[in-house]
Length: 260
Image (cartoon, rainbow, N blue to C red; front, side, top):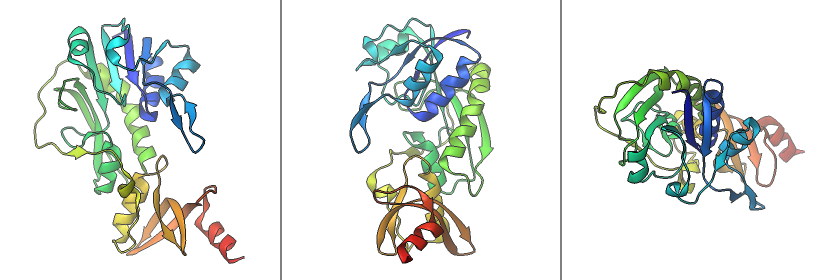
């Protein structure tokens, strides 16, 4: 697997792309088109494109994957964000890097859903891509612990570290076994903090959405994003927040600002 293509869009895909480029000749990056982002709705490149540009890798951004000239036999797909049509599945050897222990947490937000569910373990699975979502046969899989204060960023980083070795180990494939669970895309309701819930559940939601999305709630009568917390017995302690229109800061500093 010396010369490969990569299909990636999100930050996790960008991280894996950078690691693969250390070992392989990357023929191209297939990624999603630039999109408006942020409050100013400025057109912004996907994270994977930013990495590819830095590494001098050819970037393909078609509206439909079938419109691209994919000149590699093997293509590694990781956090690409669109379905690959059957005609392309049949034309190339597609390997998918998925940050969960498939068949648990198929879908768009496997790390976030695992942490929200209180899972103590997750992992990385390499599958042969199939038409059904994340249902292809498994070529390699490795588990690792989710520590009590790991946020999604830490788990994604650990998964990206494992990806290159697992891709190299994926030489034979077997069907997935066990009942599948699904990791739905994070929506607005998933971000809301219900302070009546147990401290651990709230902490799990906060760390599942950090550092890339953010959990939201009302604190001291103000709407804030909560980025970091910890559990002390049955009590939730907030560590880092971001007021509306403001910057991230320690919770203590924010409280001092309110009371000054």
